[in-house]
Image (cartoon, rainbow, N blue to C red; front, top):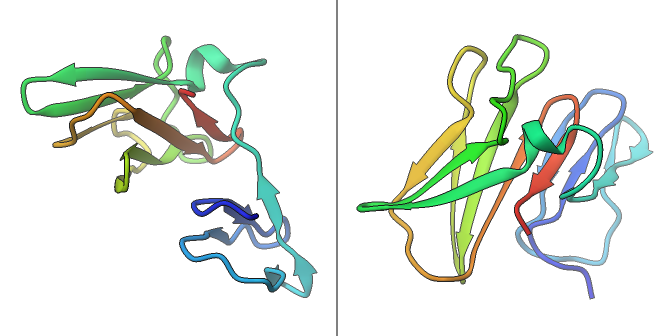
Length: 125
């Protein structure tokens, strides 16, 4: 069964789609099937991409990478998503901003992931 919250990207125009309700059809853009982006946790560049989750007095703070991620015009973290059970929060970022997000979530099962414009999706678990 296909999981919700998958992310697909068109390799022609770079449109990015997040699946929130699963259907049976194929996602197509620019006349070609879109590519499913796999979540990464390890490998080259992990020190700048794996989300670091920290609990705060008001919820959760997510910082991207143990080493700060670049936030340049062509290479930046476009969004950070934080999930706790059935609740998800998403924060969109722009070049020049810090690669971090805060949200008022609680719980013990926190999943965070981010989308880097060059290195795609990274997750903490």
